[in-house]
Image (tube, rainbow, N blue to C red; front, side, top):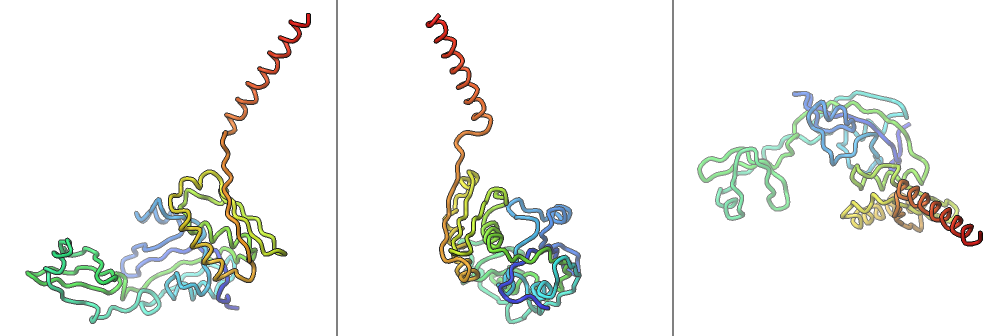
Amino acid sequence: MALPDGAFVLVEYTLRVKETGEVIDTTSEEEARKAGVYDPKERYGPRLVIIGEGRLIPGLEKTIKELSPGEEKEVEIPPSEAFGERKPENIKIMPRNVFIRSGVVPEPGKIVEINGMLAVIRSVTGGRVVVDFNHPLAGKTILARVKLIKLIEDVGEKLLHLVLRRLPPIIGEEDVKVDYDAKKKYAKIMFNEKILQIADMQAAKRLVVGEIRKYLANAVSELEFSEHIRIAGEGEKKQTETEAGKAEDKSGEQAKTEGG
């Protein structure tokens, strides 16, 4: 039975270009390092996918939708269900001085933004620049190995993964605690001191709130964010306790001396 739209799942996958074997996306840190595409800003490990959200290429999401928890599959995804077919009409010829006026030196292979769209400069000949607005992977067949790790049904766990996917990998599951009261439809998301390292935390919170309203509005009517900051570390705490104990012993000895 196909997973319904809105279902939360954790998946592992690796995508390669069939023609070259090049890895273009993976949830595996080992695969990323092996392929030379490791990104320290990327969160590796099972990835949250919300069926119907449209964050993945259609062929990959279609495959995930048909999997059962624990099932792994290898599929070949045609261009029409990956990054689209290459369209000749998406290749334009533009005057070189248009780029120069914008402070851009046109060079083959350079990615540029034109009218809000990304494009690749294919060639520069005299005063003419050939610009390709096709996706760099358009026309490519993609090989995908994908495994459905888990179907998430617990609301608290759904909230946890919504939060984690909006934060950099320095924030792990151990740094976030979620309390959820189903009866009151009340959720509290708590962070430890690591959250102080995130400069754009407010933006991340806004995104999470928007996704909760979109996907969990029936389960969550109130949400609270909080930060739990421990001022003294364990070592400092033990040292303080030891010093306090020594001071207490010293006071006791002094009292005995004065009394004796």
